[in-house]
Amino acid sequence: MALYLTGMGADIDPAPRGRLLDARRHGLQLAGAVLGVLDRPMRPVRGGFRMGYDEVDLPFVPAPGRDRLEQDARSADLHVRQRAEAYLKRMDAGQPVPRSVRLPVAVVRVGEDLTFLLAGGEVVVDYARRWKRLLAEDHPWPVGYAYEVPCYIPSVRLIKEGGYEADSSFIYYGFYGPFDAGIEDRLVDRVSALVNGLRGP
Image (cartoon, rainbow, N blue to C red; front, side):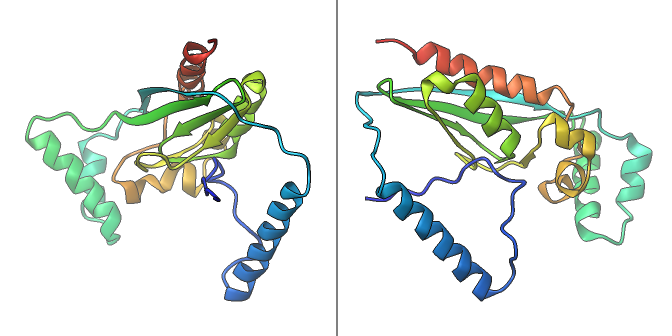
């Protein structure tokens, strides 16, 4: 039985893309990669399941002041306007505006042979690469888009680079970003702590 799991590659797109022919070509490439794995010796996965779950707060930089919000509330862009209106409504009701995103994370360990690392959101490949390096002895398999997708989850590198996904994509999620650059270490440390807690017999 085949099981599809979306990895942590929110900043990776197939190329070329946009046409049905492109999708078919990528499908053939994927099928070839699967067959290539099936033709090689497999590593057994044995043992019982252990799971750990947590949620981590990923803070934004401070939200803009009322002047900026009122300016955005007059924007011709519907999404910019709706985001600003939602923030102003909360402020007028005496409620705090969003200062962070609470992201679900989990670890599912199968014996000592395989460890799934799950995180909500559109998680970028830098996290997968870092966990594969830090937790190599646990045979990690990073999985993104787990539980829910509150927004794009960039790394420090992408926060510094800026651009659509790391900053302006938050318009469509209803948040004022970007994230504080400390989110990468916070997220990596929390998932790594879950893995540490599941090690051993």
